[in-house]
Length: 232
Length: 232
Image 1 (tube, helix red, strand yellow):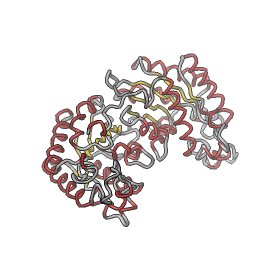
Image 2 (tube, chains in turn orange, cyan):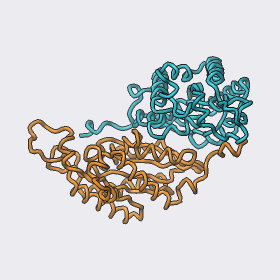
Image 3 (cartoon, one colour):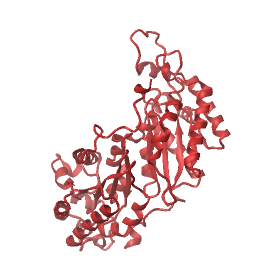
């Protein structure tokens, strides 16, 4: 048996195989033991995720020999864009975000009943860096206000934790974890939103910890081929 | 359609999702367009590869929606270990290496007839660094001789190219390509055998070029979900 670990999320997932990324680190860690499947969609909210979930998951497949063991569901960073700021078109109201997370959970459990859904909260936001790294900022917007705030991200993080509990699913509160790192604003984030090397490391280690709690670790999962020394 | 790209090889493949690795770079490059599947086995020769190929490929699956489009076959670095040196237990005679490559090709084409097999030759060897990084060197071996030579690796590279031609398959002559890089001994290799950051980059670009020639590029492969801008 060689399980699959699916990463389903927004740009922080899409970029997770870039240098030092948490997705590549997982694939490297589980080499010979599990396949890490990337389903990351830059700019996507839970609303958009629901539009594509059926199509994007259909090719993955899951059978006895290669079951989907866990799906990381990592949305909210875009949903939490403030409605009255320049990325307001992304905003998803908190109640809808929660309902969408439930629908994503339900869909995954429908197609892969034995898969565990691990929710990941949105990361914290460093507002100063967001002002400097504004995306699609209209010229006429001279407010100097960031499109996301850490407070809003925190509300979405709490809302995500609530849904995880309702679903009896594990959850990684990366919003809180990353803020425990010294100088987190600059050490864990590259542009106030996406993960720097240290942020990738923190998330990678949290995912490892959650997977281990589910019995998915390099100690418990069998290697799919013997070490060369045993073949000599 | 979201094709799969399978990486089948030895440690240079197994480590390809480490920081800056050519496998992770491929997954990052083809995000939303293809899945990169890692099947790397440290220390393996073509002889060992044939022992496990059935088991290791069986979970991958290939169907209309997610066909295996290409398999990178990257063995020979271990086969080319010299028979009379301290890693001689790895050595596979040149004629058997060629026969084994043909058998690997035949097996892949049997299970996935539409997949293209892309052969990759063993990389060049920097002998001085191999002496310093000797693996399983017995105490009594004070010969000071490396377990691999660049000349032997070159013979296996040529033998690999011959088989690729016989199979009408593309081949990446990384043995030659890497030796065109200034100071290749230290710039492309980390320990005289495995790839440093620059060696990973050279191989990544060669793989991209071969895939593009097969119509597998980020320009020709459809994204599996629309960019967020088109959803607004």
